[in-house]
Image (tube, rainbow, N blue to C red; front, side, top):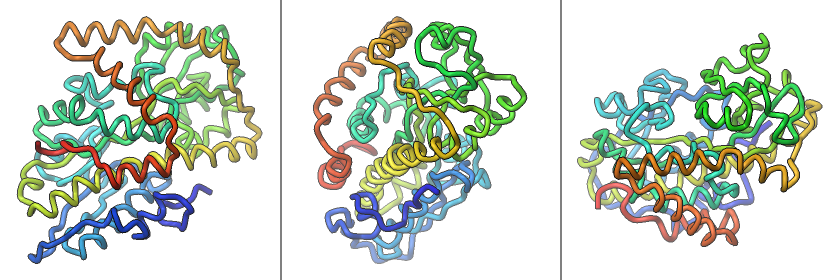
Length: 367
């Protein structure tokens, strides 16, 4: 079973949620009535994600001496997967998951992680890189939607689970790959067919033979019992999944200054906590679950992996050129990703989390 976020852990994320990192505690001077917000998300309780939010929200309420309480409304009880931006704008919830992958337009740079093999493979490094990129590249796209940027949390890479082994580029040929969201051109460049299927329907689609493989995250493979159907797992790191959050502007602007600062810093702690628990810890635990289920785990030879990368590389340049033609600095964004990846490559997961505590990125909201 995957570890709950609130359980005792010998890592910085667990220490933070247990108030063992004094530097993370906000300085609260507000003495008025408690502020109560609603946080809405569509994720079902079976997922490993809700315990992270629950532990984080509990920490925040305690850290603000009960003066700022954020109540969770999960499993789509308040807002569904596609309702985040609209629901936050209209203040159905002050704070919610707002998935850019579900938006057709307006988040072209925020969707950079949907480009194949652009994201660093070290999830903790990627979490910090994303935070540093947000004020310049992602925040403006959220504000154009009349909401504030909360965070863009990385929740692990897209790997492949299939009914037949995929060890080399040629093995993709003719595969019908179910994917919650992905560019059909990427599938075609690999010789496969991407079939867009909402994630709750992926299991049944494979069970009924509509697809041969699924490209998704490791924690999701386990939560949705995909190893019951597919006995081969290929490490790809094709793209990465994100959980995006947005904030109602009027609600935030009405907060007293100390609560504004506390909330903004909180966003930069929730994001790496999600990455650590879902994108790192859960992935490591998934490997044991694959072994128990009789799944063969496949890591391509480096030369073969390079062939796969080269097959889709022109699509990244095509995407960047299209963004540049529309006045968006995609080439600068790609260069900044590589620069920051190199900058943080030598840091441990705990060191990177502590960086979010001691050196939060300025300019998330306001400025």
